[in-house]
Length: 261
Image (cartoon, rainbow, N blue to C red; front, side):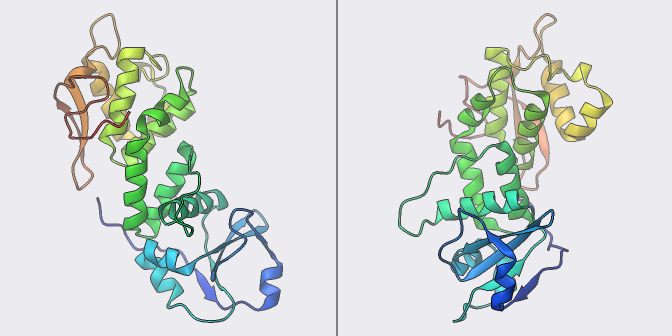
């Protein structure tokens, strides 16, 4: 995985006075116990997440530096410029990975939430949440793809492909390829020869190139018909390629990914 750059945003870390808390609406999922209050601003509303500081320090060296050591007294306040939705998804992943009562709470994010978790894992240089995210996506890749179904919108499909590319997930790509080849899903919206300029910009050059290569090996009458010969691979540095390799069964992948579903 690529080394993450240090964030350039400005956070304010303070020990709160009572009045500071009065202007913060606690999120209903994170409003009980904790020694750190993370505050995000949504439009003009300040939303707070009351969390365990040790969980945050475990998640990220950047957060460890920002929070400093645990201290007695009222919760420390960390004000960040992240969206409420991204932070909520990120904290749900951390709580799922390290449940306080020994039993992980339900955790079934959608694609937008997966993407939000990835953004914050990158921003805060969090190796641990990124590892948990990667494993969770690999484990549920088939379900993530199937939940979109054959009638997925172009926007949803583009978001799925961006997620697969951002996570460098060969296995998630293999699930997409299986649906394209065996189920004939999404041919109308993922035909690279019919993309508009806006489509190409939305996908980005790498994903557009991947789809173009996958489509180029099709037979003359069937789009995405020969995908058993190809696999989308990523190097440790994040470089992507489409390799010629035979996938012997739906869902199996010569890149070494394990099939869970």
